[in-house]
Length: 215
Image 1: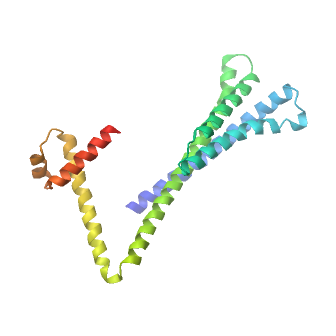
Image 2: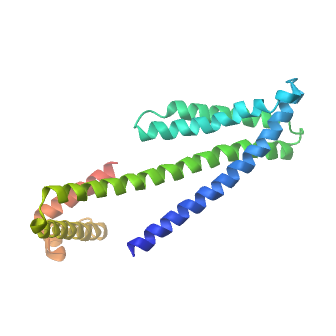
Image 3: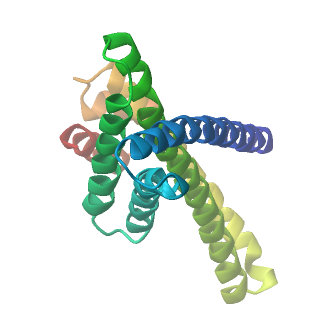
């Protein structure tokens, strides 16, 4: 069951990534030609006019990559957001400047840079999700390798018992958590009787619930 869920998650992530790449490519092309026309209109050399939209729209990509890089390193991401949002605004204004004066045309010309900004950020979210999943797998493998290195083969049964005990504790905690959601005013005695758990488990779950509410 877990394998099928994992494969489904991977397929969803893959399809999202492909869709976002298509949207980003179309948005970039539409914005590129609008900005190129604006550059020519502004007097920039026709043969070099292609470089002007790249200067603007590629900074959107650079800003998103900076956000991704900073978040991976647990560093502030405000500079990346400043670049992304700032040059999205610049691109949008120049796209609108090249459009006809009616509201519908201006709105239509504003869509490509905004769609490019959103699609790039969605793509970065897909990348972050993939990195997070890979990190979880690495931690799990490293934990298992560490256990195998520290415990000889004859003691593996002890590891299984520990895992079962941890699983049992999680199930008990979930049972208490669900019971408290339905009966928030239940006393310790009632919870212990209904869920067949110790007072320590009840106290721990109550503390976790208080932390969730505080967050």
